[in-house]
Image (cartoon, rainbow, N blue to C red; front, side, top):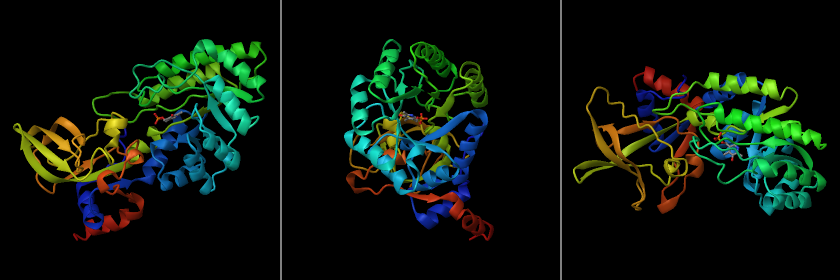
Length: 387
Ligand SMILES: *Cc1c(COP(=O)(O)O)cnc(C)c1O
């Protein structure tokens, strides 16, 4: 499978010489490719990019240009897109528990599509956005998900029909069902199970006079991961086939986050300290848990560190970040080549849930982000001229 954007060793050297370290390098071509792969294998699903995964303005601009819609969860995300000129009709406010300022932002920016999963939400929506088009967020059980969102969100199968009836009664435009099987789901089964329940609910709703016509299958589509095997085209084919069979007339939406941006960013980070503790080498990097590697904590992601040292014996080491907090240790007992001061590490697939949750803790700046396609020609010219 296509592993996504990955810089060469020379490109890494040239980029650090120009921009310093740490550095995040974003490939917009890869974002576009990812969008097109999803369009190809899930042709009926209208993509709503979940911008929390990576809200970099260049990604948002490109996705908007490509015709994507957006999944937003807060007033800040709504306003970001509004200020970029994205029409509110292209947004879904997919946070089942909304803030008052979030609803006000919907009202101000023309966002009229949202999800809910409880009675309290119905009154809140109707008060600020009367007649909004709503989808019931359904809970689906998927203990195999990399990050399971269903312990926090979603109405139970038993409560679903009643909630939908109450939404309609309150004056909302009760239009469909949404679910999220959990992030980085590598098999079709959880989607198919959620589709089974949705199909039953569509039928039950029809019997009581509710016309459901939108099905939002959420995000969760996977990117290549160390030690995990899956077949993306096959997985999406199974989902597509089931959509055709059971929802031939419904409008289908999806909300990919990680899939769009995950493989489009590389982190370059440098070794700034080397020591030994209890016989084990410790490498301190100029990027840590409070920065791009926040994904270790928030996303439980197993990042791959490439040292460009080929054919050397691997050792076990610990990798720590630059801050003065003892929590700031990213990887313990990782296999790595022996490293030295100043060595550069390349971390591919660093685009989702990384810079988005980075902080300035302890006074460290967030890693600079550059767009590869803006620099590519110049860097390649440097390489070719031997500079
Ligand atoms: C986070 C989130 C997504 C994106 O999930 P990925 O696993 O990154 O695809 C989509 N929809 C909702 C409602 C979310 O909360």
